Amino acid sequence: MAPAAASGGSSLPSGFSVFVTFPDLLFIFEFVFGGLVWILIASSLVPIPLIQGWVMFVSVFCFVATTSLMVMYVFGTHSGETSWITLDAAYHCVAALFYLSASVLEALATITMYDGFTYKQYHENISAVVFAYVVTLLYVIHAVFSLIRWKSS
Image 1: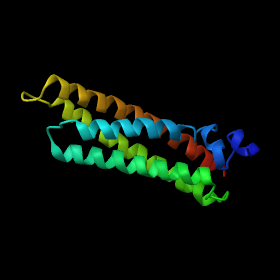
Image 2 (image 1 turned 120 degrees about the horizontal axis):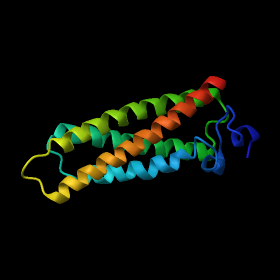
Image 3 (image 1 turned 90 degrees about the horizontal axis):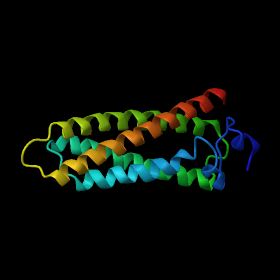
Image 4 (image 1 turned 180 degrees about the vertical axis):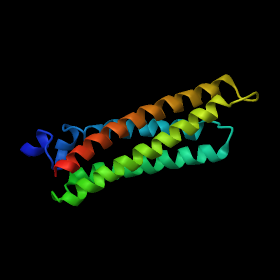
């Protein structure tokens, strides 16, 4: 493990040190909770299909992109180049913004649920909203610390 990566320096970790350095440790939680959002949105019934489509797009896009970045970091494809630090910061800022918009829209759709929906469907939507806000918080934290790493690189 590189000393800069272990101490939160300005370089990206590679190998399994991705799973023990902060903020890259958050990849695991973004992966798990993002997958939960994807599953909950896919199984829930949202009264406005356009909102469900956007939330589904955001959850799938971020899940695939986060998984891809995590795998590339583990394999060390960044080779210590600073352009990857910029990519990491930019991606997490975009993901945080996307998830914030998806969370707000999903909450709005859940609030406006009216007659014709079962108690179970309502609770699925509430769970999707809660996990979407958790993932939003994870991406915001990761974005802030990625921007700090980018600034110091």
